[in-house]
Structures are given as C-alpha cells and as structure tokens.
Image (cartoon, rainbow, N blue to C red; front, side):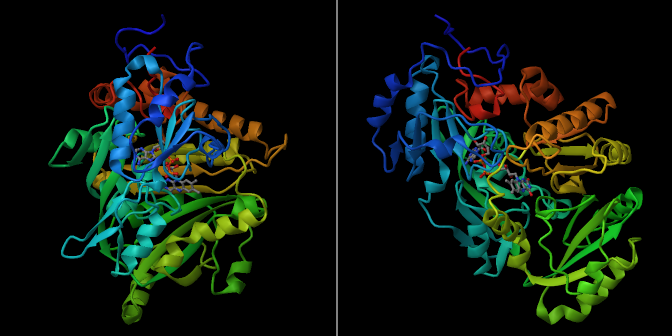
Length: 517
Ligand code: FAD
C-alpha cells in the first residue's frame, strides 16, 4: 500500500494537480457522509460552481459540498473524516465567496464547505467604548457594512472589494488603503471561533488559545475553519472626500505616499496605481470615479506615458465641512503632484467602500467579469521599490498592462508578527497588485499565456535582483518554494499544521501540505 502509518509533513512533494491515488474512489466514503446527522445537508451533484473561482484558471470538482446550517455540521463532518484516518484521502476546503485566484478554495474529489450557508446567528453588534461585531466566518463584508452602519459604526480595515467573506480575507490578511493606519483586517479581530482539522471547536483570542488564533490569521486555511469572528469597529464617517492626483515621476509619487503614511494625522485611506498606456474597460475597471470637475478630468490623458496616481480619502461629517476643507488643503499643500491634475469628489462612505462593485456591474454587463484573472500580488520592501518600479514598469511591462496595477505603502507598526502572514522584513512595505484580466481565446498580449509569462518575468526579476519581495495571496507549485516563502516562519507553520490539522485535511487547494503521502 502507498499509505504510510503516519504522515510525514516534511517529506511531501507537490504536483501541478492535486494527486489522488488511483485506488481512491470517493464513492466508497460518500455513503458514510450521508449518514451524518446534520442541521444542513450535503449535495453530491451540480457542484460545478465549487470547482470555479475568480481566477478562473483552476477547476477541481469536489465529491460533495456541505451546506452547513450550524458549526456542529462542520465539526461533525471534519471529525468524521479525521476518524477515517489518512487512508480515506478525503480533504476539506472551506469556500467563502470563491474569490481565490488559483483554486485555493477547491478540494479535488474532496468536500467543499459552502461557508455562506452558515448563518446560524445574525450579525451581532456590541456598542460601547470598544465596539465590535460578532459575525459568521461565511459572512460577506458588504453585509457587515450594511448592518454596522445602522448603528453608526463600521469595521476599521477593509479590502477594496466587499463581496468577500470574513473567513476568506482573514485567511490571507485583508489589505487596503486603511492598513497603514489600522493594520490589515487580521490586525482588527478580537476573537475567533475555529473548527480544527480534528473537528474540535475552539474559541481563541490573544489571551485564549493564542497560538491557534495567530496561526489561523493569515494561515491560508491550513489550521482550522473560521466559523465566527469578533471584528473591531469604529464610528463610521458619513461622507468621504475622495481625491486623486497624478505624478509623472515615480520617486516623487512614492516619496509623497511614504510621507502621508508616516503620520496618523493624515488621510484615512491611501492607495495609488500605475497608469501604463491606459485604454479600454479592462484597464480602467477599478477607476469607478466620477470627478466633480470634468474639465480637469479631461486633462487626464496617459497615452504613451507612464503616470502614477495617488488616491486618498478623507472621512468627514456634514458638520465638519470647514475643518475638513482646511485639513485637505494643508495635506495637499505638502504634496508635489502635477497641479492641474487634482480630481476631487464627495461620496457617501458606503459608496466609497463599495466602489469596485459598481465596476463589477459594468464588467458583468459586458461579459468581462467571469474571465481568467491571472493576478499577481507582491509585497515589496520600501528600500527596493524604486529599483522594482524602474525595471517592472519601465521595462518588463513596457507600455502594456492588462488591468489595473495598484501600488501603495503600508507601515507595519500595526501588523502583528505572530500571525501566519509573511511580509518582507522592513518596517514599510509596498503592496503591488497586478490585477490582470485575460481576454478569452486571445493569443495576443492580452491572452492568458502572455500574462502568465509576464508575471513569471516579474517574479524571476525579483528573485534574481534579490529584492526580498514576498507574494501576497501566495501561489506555488513546489514545497521548496513554500519553504522559501515562509523563510524563518516555515518551522512554526509546519508545527502548527501538525498540532491543528495533523492529517492535512484542510485547504488542500493551497498545495502546501498533502494528505497521506
Ligand atoms: P475563498 O476564495 O472562498 O477562500 C480563500 C481561502 O481561504 C481558501 O484557501 C479557503 O479554503 C479559505 N477559507 C475560506 N473561508 C474560510 C474560513 N471560514 N475559514 C478558514 N479558511 C477559509 N484582498 C485584499 O487583501 N485586499 C483587497 O483589496 C482585495 N481585493 C480583491 C478584489 C477582488 C475583485 C477579488 C476577487 C479579490 C480581492 N482580494 C483582496 C483577495 C481576497 O481577499 C482573497 O482572494 C480572499 O481569499 C477572497 O475571499 P473569499 O471569501 O472569496 O475566499
């Protein structure tokens, strides 16, 4: 038999498709799943959606999808699979909103847990000095926003897009323009309820089962399934001043970004993006921005040039108009953007946070949402960002890009090093996100192969030039690469896997560990 007595997590190897031994026949074990006494149910057919994600390049069909109604549905399923031992080969992937990029929420012939059906309890809001929301791990951030706004509150740290689940973003980090001030979403959680790979339900926080708490945050779904999370809240602003300004020179752009994130008395949100020969909807879909002054907007023309756009937001209430205008004037006066390129708009907080959804709707109408998305997200240390920009924007991308390229610095003072998230070893790092869309069936520059080759060149350059970059939303195909990714954190990551998911049942789509080799 190829099944060992025990699992050696250190000797596994990884392959392009998740390997399933030829003797494995999922139909043998499915009858036993059917016998489980559940509040929800399993579906064994029409599960094709669980073999899809936003990336739309990896498709692995599960044998069953669990639609849990309670935490105990999840724990009994995992416990049942755990008790079968390594021989069953059955794995389990939590699926949040399925917005992974390379099959991370899929389980080849395994069980996918449809986390969005876990709405056992409503979103519960606690007002008071340190307000928080208790939410299901399968809850969408957009729903949390709607509910907390009814109390005049909102989470502090966001992602740019809100149709993602709490469990999905907390398994990565959850980074957006507020992260310089509040840290990523994983820095804004007080408590989690987790079902481990042994089926145990554990409450954890920085004071209780802290090792599991930090393991799960940024843990790529490897240690447990997040069934509940306690999210820290703040008073929500009513309105937003949303500002964009342009630079033709990268070093002035990044200098200004770094200046802005160095102070707490700054904007509430700071991001930025690169404009490389921008044309077409696929390149501009993140720019759902309607500047109030169209004359100024019409001066915005990047044809043939690479420009850098600094994007900022300032929160305010209607009774603070004078003071916010003064603050805005002061903050802008410290910046050296091209002065004819000030775009300014006022929108509600909801409209601002939900901005990408408006673009989504536009793309969906044109059939351009559910196409392959070969995205590449990198964290680049500040000391190397100029070098990176010169080569990548000036040479590798060379007048062509296939989607928005976000770039903004965050300072890591609010980031907890105990979590599983891996970042470059510097206080300030840049998130650089190449959000490419591949035109279906194209073999040209905008085709999938070409974009993947371009991504590879960027990664190779970072390695050759020893820039010390790390992938965010990482994806690798060998364990050597995973080891290199985790670096000094690899040992702890492996030990935590042995402690919380010793049979390597969970999140097989990340392809870090493999069940029973
Ligand atoms: P899924 O894709 O369903 O799952 C992701 C991983 O987490 C899988 O391994 C899965 O098994 C695991 N998982 C899911 N739920 C749970 C759970 N409850 N417990 C344990 N593990 C679980 N990220 C940012 O940081 N900032 C951004 O601004 C940002 N913008 C984005 C915009 C778009 C349009 C898209 C498509 C993605 C964006 N992302 C961003 C990336 C996003 O945060 C991740 O892809 C995230 O994993 C998606 O959440 P999901 O609910 O769809 O997770």
